[in-house]
Amino acid sequence: MWGLVSHFFYDITHFDGKFFSTTKLLITKPGFLPAEYIKGRRASYLHPIRMYVFSSALFFLIFFSLFKPKKMINGSFMDDQPAKVIDSVKQLSQAQDFLLANVNNAEDSAVIMGKFGNIANRIKAEKAREDSIAKAEEDSLANFIDSVSDGHTNMKKWNKKKNKARKNISWDEASSHYKTVAAYDSAQAALPEAERDGWWSRLAAKRNIELAGRYKDDERAFWTDIIDAFMHTFPYMLFISLPLYAFFMKLLYFRHKQIYYVEHGIFFIYLYIFTFIFLLLYFSVMELRLKTHQGWIGWFEALLLLGGTYYAYKAMRKFYGQSRGMTILKFFLLNVMAFFALLILFIFFFTITVVKM
Image (cartoon, rainbow, N blue to C red; front, side, top):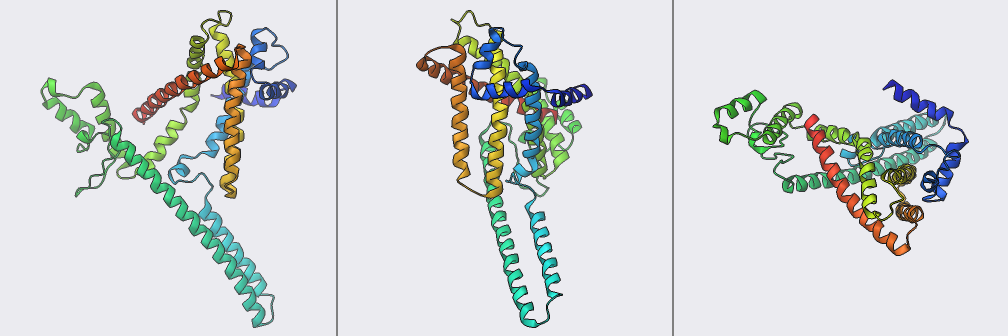
């Protein structure tokens, strides 16, 4: 771990002009750098692996600082607004007291109190409005979770049946009445071998019992921990997806015998680096919209997404040198395959996350 940290800071403090010139070419000339790499012209540019390590580390450092699971569960990506409102009201009260201490008549005092009262009421009204929006988003998220859990596989996320006992988190309704793993094992041992649960059902049942005992009825804490652990698998997910996407590209361009599998991987390394830079810009714009409550910024976000899509298409056409129509077709097919591959990876890593909790 210390070796990775020290190497990361070495890269930050020792990058020369190659980093900035390579980044400029990466952004302004889609597909140019991977084409240069396979032609052997590499000395003038920063090595793609080194650039990938640095850009991915920087991206996820910022990503995890922006997206907090607790804020996501609360329906807000913003900072702690209630604390800010309390501070603002307190500062207003202090300013009012200072001014009142320096006036000599009741009329001036009434004017000051009226003005400060109006400002405080506006702050409180804005706070109430934001709380209402956050509550609506939280309810929407809860409804979505309910709808997904009701229709997704036989492993229900929540057992909302109320009884005289307390409500517990349940992944497997059949095992929800067992309080300990030992009780479940004892019940299984008493059954004929043909009626016992299979290995997956046993694993799901034991995890259900352990999670129910750990979280009781605290659904918010459960989802916070789940999302936090799942989000921290994203770097591994991207790392696995890269050679997988390179394989898809090898299938799409199987007639290009002069381009080897490794060179498809180089193309995606550069594309991933651009994606990291692009997403940092996109998240910054999104955060600006959330901070300022300016809806028109959303149009700029949409333009950024269109621009990022066009960049990927342009890089693909430049690197592989095919016609516009053929590139569009293969670009579409690549995205379809990538979508299903990413969906499978999401399900796999989410399952691993739950099993390891």
